[in-house]
Image (cartoon, rainbow, N blue to C red; front, side, top):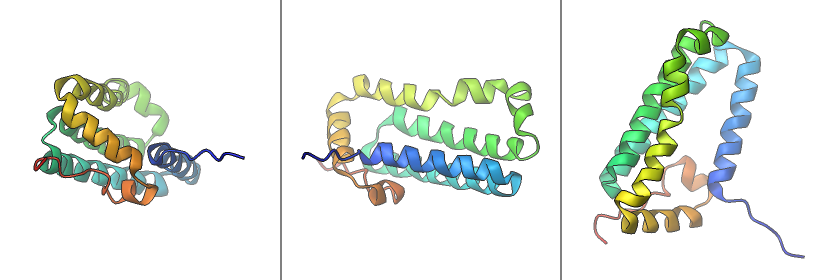
Length: 140
């Protein structure tokens, strides 16, 4: 019988999604710190990505995602339902921008992107959580 291994990126997304559902059920006491932690990790991702790869679109996307996450956490801590009504630009425009910018990077810097994707596919969940899945591609 052949086993199918789930990619680390999918496990990471599932873990974050599960934690968000639990935090949302607990309320603002858990919601705000979670989004602040996610924003901190995204800010670190932006810095590490720039230092190791010099990929501008991916760096910009991670930076925007960090600011968006912080906004969602702070505004959503008061009234989550009003977040979509009072700040739809932050939620509906900035949230999908990170994947779009990552998608653009594929065409802007195809060689570096291909090496980055190869490393990410070999990464484990722990590597993704600690941002070790981003190789130093400046010296290649």
